[in-house]
Image 1: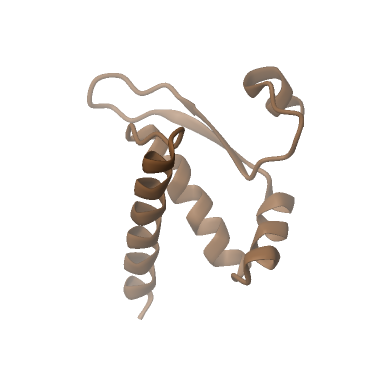
Image 2: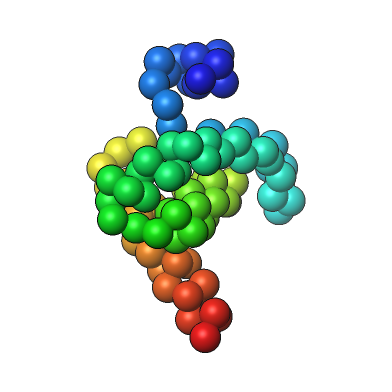
Length: 94
């Protein structure tokens, strides 16, 4: 919770916080994931923990690649890209 308050001024839990240190064409950053929040969200949305964790990791990577999610349009685009990546991960498992 301290990271939320200190860096995002949030007073609530979030599943992932991304710190983007990317420069030019080099992707670099830190992803802080709350596994408890991922578990809670997985149960809330009827997803497996593994799939929800993958979604959160993809979400953070998309932020490192420059994808924002501040507006409803950006959120829709983010969700579409998350779902595309999840589908491709699942295809790779078979």
